[in-house]
Length: 323
Image 1: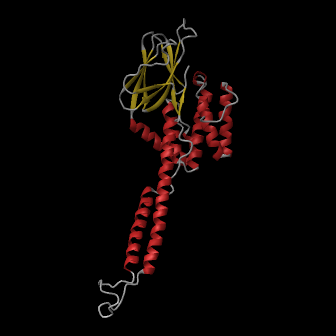
Image 2 (image 1 turned 135 degrees about the vertical axis):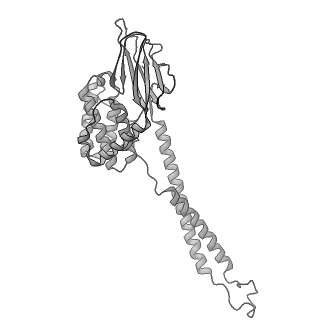
Image 3 (image 1 turned 60 degrees about the vertical axis):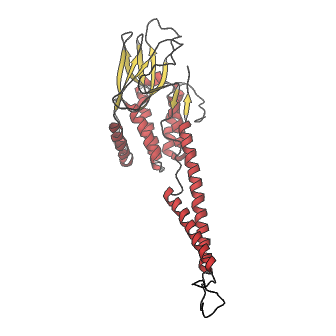
């Protein structure tokens, strides 16, 4: 389960949940981040209603910016950038309220806008055998008015949520809408999604070039929390290696303690007037080396395990939706 259960599964309830979470994130940002993120994801379940509600679309954009601001304030720049990327990819031609961003968030938004433009654009072609309506990222992208024709849209590279529904006058309840996600991963390419208008194949678009994932909805609003390393990997490895070197040096000093410098018989005072006195230094180096090796090794193991778990969690955050 990716978020808290919603007591009200209606569209007004979903909108109200976003409004409540928006207030909470301004009063209690630490708890409000997860609440607002879950409310925004839940709102996507109401694609047709949201696409026809400009006021709530504006509310959603403000909520996404508030979420990014809270993530940035908590020190999680990675999550803030991911949230902004998702908002910009879904923005289409809607204006961005730049006057409400503030200096810190405004700088990050400008940076992500430049990155989005640098990635380039691809084209999404939606083919319909009958009249149909195309919604992209819960925004109206236009209709296919002529049966058997298509609508082609220029979209920024990234993942886009697609909803296609029939507008044919003879459409029946069996003509389920098509709901899918499309990944545009190469500039200047065309991805084609075909809507059959029938219940049997509404979940099976036919993509060409690129990738269309039917029924899967990735969570683009950034990870729940980014786990930071205890220390940089290079520092952990350096500590481990330096500790090992100190252990070896200390062991050598302990081994030559009370021995003659030139290997002579220690009992022959003429040949060996003095002996090595390295016991204290050897013990100190062995102790320091052991401590450094243990510290560096434990930190490296813990951080690699934690970061590996985070990557696995990010790859596994997928919802499956079927009609």
